[in-house]
View (cartoon, rainbow, N blue to C red):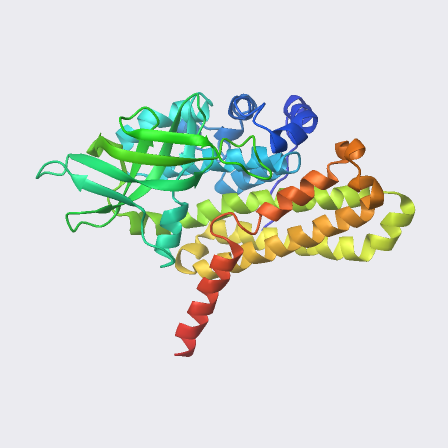
Amino acid sequence: MMVARRHALPSELATWLDAHAEAIDTSAAHASEIVPRLARAGLFRVGVASSLGGSGGTTVDAIEAIAMVAQHSLASAFVFWGQRTFIEYMLQTDNEPLRARWLPALLAGEHAGATGLSNAMKYLSAIEPLQMRAAARDAQATRFALDGALPWITNLRREGFVVAAAFDRHDGAPPAIFAVPHNAPGVTRSDDLDLIALRGSNTAALTLTDTELDAGSLIDVDARAFLVRARPAFLGLQCGMSIGLARRALDAVALSSPAVRTALADDANALRNELDGLSARLYEGVTCGAFVAKPAAQFELRIALADVVDAAVRLDVQAAGGRGYLRSTSATGTARRSREAAFVPIVTPSIVQLKHQLAQARRCEAA
């Protein structure tokens, strides 16, 4: 099995994340700082070819980078995931002028990238229809009017963002994916959603009303084909959040008192071994491209990693004992990690949605 190289975060970033993790989780006070700080640490360039302005490496290296951030702050890792996933779309698009337009600013953290394709991923799995519509304004389909609403998108920085969204076409053509900038006419960002955690992640709803873009903003003219190619990275990068949070919870157990460590050692060791095994399988599948043809294998890994996160955080709570339940000791991070873990099963595609997909696949195989 493949084992990815692990690197430590730059000390300045790690220190800042540790100092502000609670505030990032519970308020928007530092929401504007996350993208620039991650960019200064060079994290958005990980897994991007040097010829495109990156620092080299693979998608697996980017997953590991997200996991490293998640060990300090899941909200910051969630922002990282949104930015890096949009960067991945720019790497995979055939629209070179679009890539040249957006990629440098995204890598430098000068602009936020948001993946509004959660609805599209559910559409790809036949869970729900597309919620956005595109109508060609001319016979040559060089300009489009875009309408619709997406209720939940992360990394919609008020300082400026570009969001990827999939649109049904009125002209019989396949659904298409557009890159929609925040300042296009008819684009409206809601106030931040009233989340119970991850409140510094710039998560809001987006509405488009007669927003006009030209064909130069097309990430791909065939949403379904693009999503099949992009889904392994979309899910793989997302799994980095689970990997990092589970590691940090188990590290907290390892730092507890000798008596507590002894009592929980068997469970903690078993979970760490399971986590390492699942991570290796994920990295192998992403690297060799197996998940393109066999998405169910990646769905199963995403579900299993969520189970490991849940179990690891429960051990974290047991190790902290009553001390972790006191507000005055919130610096231990136990309560925050419990809130963060509650998000892992519901981030799209949710565990319920993935289990539904797997059940459907089994029924089809049986038939």
